[in-house]
Length: 571
View 1 (cartoon, rainbow, N blue to C red):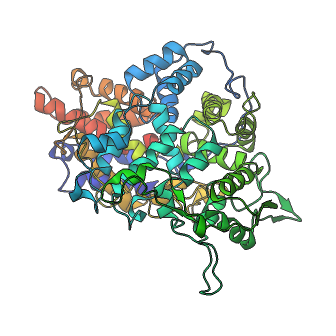
View 2: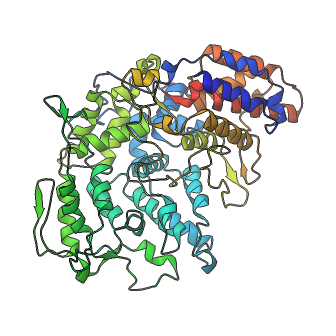
View 3: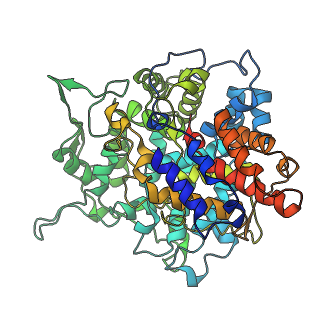
């Protein structure tokens, strides 16, 4: 933790930071004491409660406090606001989830790109418009739970825009992919698998567009990329799992889920697929919104065997694909494998096996005999005792590192960020040295920005046999880049992205009140009294009494909270 403290102090002393921050006694930050245990990003134990299946009553017995509402929204939304907190408090957790699930989808990314003329011919071989529409949706969409789940799914079933090359219109291919994830975020996982398989984005990214049946004359074989990653990353994983997500062992040895022969067998299914250019060609982006189509002469019609089952010979491409996805979806690994990752993305990095098993049970059967009901799964994982019980707040092995995208969105949502141009010029925030080190749909590989099983080497996390996925993109350099970027955004350094601090302005003269409000909405009250005191002392040393001085105090308070370890760890 000392590294993060030192990086924060360094960024406050750097000449490129806002002058208001140079007035702060940076040594006060060194008292923010957070041991590595605070960042264990893990949660073990916890028993089921009446909330665990998602069939809870509409509100708990005790009133939901501001801090509880904010903490819930840290897990269930892309950023808490006072208005959304009030809705949670008024309706209760379960009813709020139900209302979010029932909420109509907002404008699609595809429609936004079209409306803003990004389908002009000049954009054919560019990514123009994508970052704008990705941030627009995340920052403004009222269906905040759907956006959170869409983002989680995009980090499980991964496509990266930089890999969508060769056909043009990358922004539209990527936008359509996110639209497909969003449309199925509360649907069925089996339906989602079919939908993403048929997107041009996935077909390009994992290279099965144009894959053809084996041809011994030229020694060609079907492309195996998608077959491999579909099993390894999107459905069953590498190891055979128990219902609670722990590996099955035989004589102490883990058991592999599939072999190279399974990959080879499944790859035969993904032959013959190509872009549908029946009604338009590649001079417009429209083909990216249509599902892939079959070229029968290129499809392998022989039997395909994998995962102990066989798709019979003689089926056409569409029917063999459906049969193959049915086989994969029925595998017992899918429920714990996907449930655990959704918990990791939304609640905690190391859910207990009991937590995983409870959610996997809902995945397997939503109570109405339906397997793969994502709405039921999401509701169950958010209402589970391990997510809602306040005792986990004091457990150093509970929680997760907030990924940089979610930290930025927490600020943008809390302070009603608007775009003066309506083009949402946040840009590509991938640069770890100067920006967030992460940007929507810009993972460098199919393995996401970070692996679900990542263990930071030579740490107490590793010594405790825990994982901390987000630490894979966290180091001294990225911390400095993140804090500098947030400071610039917070202090209105981006003239197109404008926050509304009207709720904070009346509090600027009283640092403890200012920090208390930010702590409640942004950090769910997780900043300790000692941290608040240290920050208040620093801000009190700054000038007061003018509009400029008040603004500088607000900028400093927000920057320091967003840099605080107690905020960066979501409990």
